[in-house]
Length: 165
Ligand SMILES: [Cu+2]
Figure (cartoon, rainbow, N blue to C red):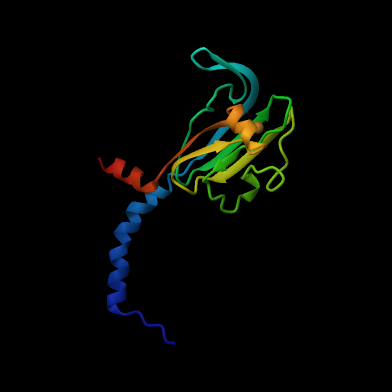
């Protein structure tokens, strides 16, 4: 097989150059985003007149909305201030080269014990309206105790459209 660089191929390459110069600055704006997330044992009024014993990320149910941009490096330190084990599973994130941060007890980590902390590090590799939740005994920790929150990852395409306006 012989490699030849025809004029047509060179023209194609030059045609792609402006496209690359637009896309690259958008991609290169990826940042390191660091968050601290405690888990608290509380009794909260989660609906008018309805109090419940919860395990609350940062003391609230649902947990805080985490807003990042596609491509950002995300680092979340979870500090467990409760009397039982917890994790954070980043639901929808592909976890490319970061399976250790998937937050599934017995698979990617052990549940973080009372008084301990755990650091999750991953790239925001999937854009969209995602969520996170504890993956220890999900029906109880998520369904009854409110261990979940939103993860919003703004896509590169939308960022580019917003920049143009
Ligand atoms: Cu939990």
